Image 1 (cartoon, rainbow, N blue to C red):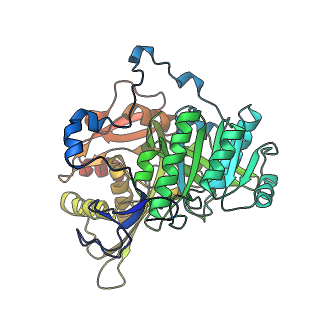
Image 2 (cartoon, helix red, strand yellow):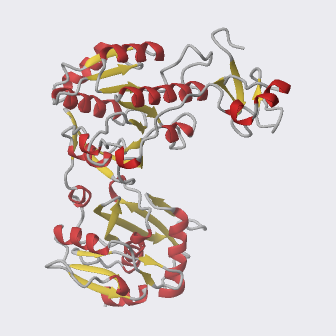
Length: 464
């Protein structure tokens, strides 16, 4: 038992309770699976509990509350707070919902604190008092960062504290509209003995912050660091507790960052916002397609353009492929931003259905701009780029390729073809190759939609 309250150690694999920590769970045998948790009050047992009756025992400690009908519930959709940062508001679904809890994850140094400091400055200037609680930096360090930003964050309230009770007590006294906690791995509660950042501390602190947000109506932003595996450090239940989960992604060698929503109770998921890292902070990019296609070479082989749907937003990206003679016995298969197993599948289809043999060739595939090509709509562009590299003939510079490639070499239709073609037309594309069944009745002005049945049909049209 903890000196500060009754705690137990629960196995994350089987859920068994233990009175003290151990390296191995006695029930399921899992190692390093016991985490510290607050113990719930035990229910009465024995003959007294049986005599009390089932309903009475289950309802012990509760109270009767009002149960309004759905038609009587007033929504807060119209009360969203705009930050003025268009890409940030777009990813959230139109702005910040009062009383919501938002988790922002990302690798160290990616720009999470910079983005939230800009958001705090915008909210403060818009009449929404903001409290920035930092457990990683002192007030002077935060001020030095704020001085480099284009936003005026001089009126934002600062709190350099890691004790959760102090943070919540201060927030209750100040009554901010928005509370920013940077980061959840540095905050701890006195009720648990574990060190800050362990599974028990992260889960308990997040649950209390969520309860504070719902009871007070304060919107809470929580920063979470990302592990080597790409997930937010701490238990997976952390993402289940919050209302919205945002991932801030980007390569250190690139000057743009992508904010992606993987969970949103108040808007669409998989929406992305693109930012460019500048000297004075993060600058929203209104047209991501122009950013990803800006440095595209006009006459090189192995380059193809496809249109992806990131949430509700179509984006044009470039796919580059290089097929070269293998220098060793076993050819290499290297893919950046694309699933390696999907690449192996397409290579087999091209060999079987189009007569392109890659058995003696090294294959390198790159999705430009650090974007991950996850939906199958980019298969046609990958196949076209691979064939272009093998034939050493460039594809039309003003063509876009959209479609899924099946095992029989057939081109399958994809969803929201009209929106993809509209974005292609806006970016100056004149030809779109896609599945015959996907060709819409209304094609944007200046764009010619060409329906193809198989990859052999596509290669015949493009390379002959």
